Image 1 (cartoon, one colour):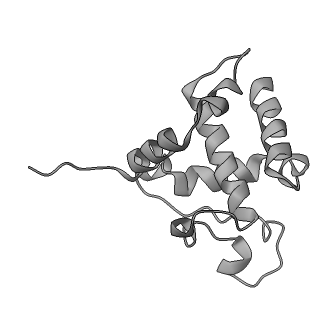
Image 2 (tube, rainbow, N blue to C red; image 1 turned 90 degrees about the vertical axis):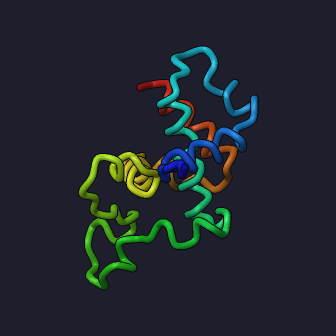
Length: 128
């Protein structure tokens, strides 16, 4: 018997292992939903990717739009959203990560440190 493991399950299990009690405590005092924790962890992963501090197995997972084509467009500094045909693919980190990170304001994305980014991202998620 073979078990089918979806890519989102692998990432979620990886994130659950990496998620410390401290990262869960950060959402105390407001609606600590699984969706907010997922967005928080995804946002941190994308921020680490922008600063080249990401795990090496995520190296080719995300690309900028400027790497897809050479046209100077408004979205050339944003992450490229890969096309997806299935609903399963739409909920994968490869699609949701760029979509969520691109939707953040420049005030949050342009932080210099991970601690400042985490603080601003928490404030943003708790204000939703």
